[in-house]
Image (cartoon, one colour):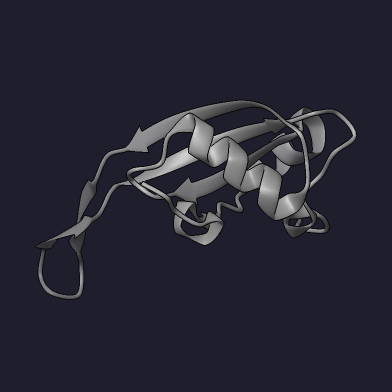
Amino acid sequence: MNSSVFDILRRPVITEKSNYQATKLHQYVFEVASFATREQVKTAVETAFDVDVVRVNIINLPAKSGRNSRTRGLAVRASGYKKAIVTLKPGDSIPVFEGVE
């Protein structure tokens, strides 16, 4: 399957933990397509941001269910997604994550 960079990388995940990982560990977190493999994520990040990727970890996050208090306890379901943690070579950085606090 020949996919573009924008088909594989959906969005950056910006949380307190991902901000810590970006500043201290050179790791950046992205939500990726469900069909994406480690090699596809690596090439997509390298071509999109012109950096050297050392390692890619992929995590499948399951769907979560909860309750909606406004509709008297109706069960709500948030869909699951695939997350990639990309470790870059020291010295490289992705500008999307800079200045986020």
